[in-house]
Length: 414
Ligand code: GAL
Image (cartoon, rainbow, N blue to C red; front, side, top):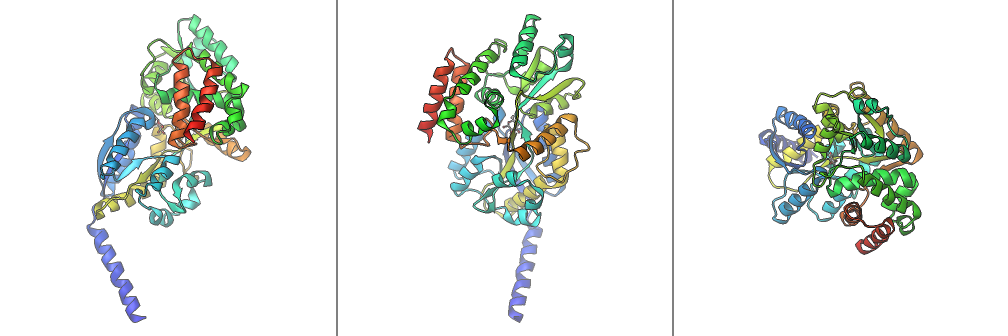
């Protein structure tokens, strides 16, 4: 007994000695490079520095993170994984299965994450019962943003059905305004597509199509109608849309060149970074239809050597889920906190609407993972869907052909 106690004490002494010398280091791979995004990630950099950490930034530009994920693959394949990586949804599990993630359960348990995170979010952060990622927020994807003055000047209300949206867009087009600010990048096409799909298929149909990959739903008349609406939307974008970054599309709404943008609430981060006020300068509403598409950003730690880097991972994980970061970061990012115990008093009306709708949709079963932002499916399946969506949007492909291609692409990817 005596020996055991002595042994324990000396282990603790050794551990605290090593903690005392470890200087937290983190090389952080992320894709937050737009104005609002950069402002948000700066909050984490600052908190990390305030707590003695040294941050090495590895930003990989490209909305939606496709380029960042390619960079990550290259780094891991070369045996030189970054310390911390912006990673989310099923991709966390995919990397876990490769055996390259660090276990952050010690921090999660010490900080009581299970008590402050909704079960639906915690589920994404756990791998085989261990904690493998730390959530920063809840973004909602199915939003429509509008320039308040442009709508008022044209006597247009925020649309509550796709028919109303189409009628508003036609009227705006006739007055020389670009109805829909859009960037022709595959992930942005997918973002608009899933908002339209949620509206037309309804929450149950969306779940069947993009979570269960149900062939009948994928080839249904309703799915044909989704592609029909996408064809109509194609007519509402300006000729310069190919390749445009999402934040430049948001800027078109800000400056009144365009009326609407369909984009997740990281777009609100851009409006706010430009000093604009929700309800006055710009308007937010959920896209027509029921349900809520969530997109939870998170960070995973990769297995790395070195006490400094491991101390950096523990510190980052603790800060990310900490209440102060969750508030300040999300005020900038446009999202709402992942933690349920952060006061929303400082948040704007769009964030309050998001929180209320999230709670209601969680109650009635219409809280759904975003397929376009990697929350619903593994990469092979979501990629297969997006390929068809973007091929349809950028060609004369018929809706019938699109659903057939969709069903075939999914069958091939399984
Ligand atoms: C999303 C990500 C958001 C936002 C957006 C545009 O996938 O979850 O945080 O940054 O991409 O880059």
